[in-house]
Image (tube, rainbow, N blue to C red; front, side, top):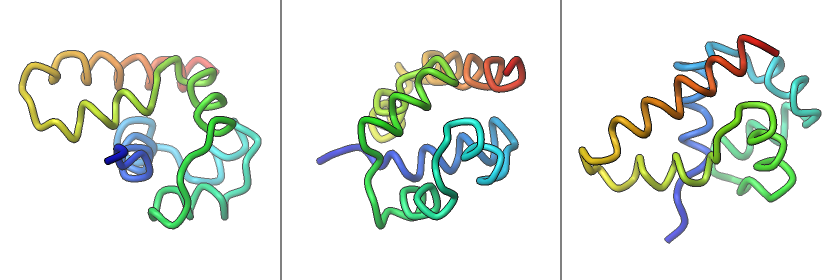
Length: 93
């Protein structure tokens, strides 16, 4: 089963980046409708979107999503580091 990237992206955008869909979409040159459908689970994030997010935030969203779904304390520090890196990169843009 693939990780739920949409839920991870929504949490990251709202809780870590504190960004609106519109602001994130402007930064990655994607439509707000597309982002909304990915976050809602209707669409999956394709390689173009994942690549743009990785370039912008400096993290692999697929890996972060996979770690979150493992519900394993061993990944807590790595996930915190990834979120902090994404927030730093977002604020520096």
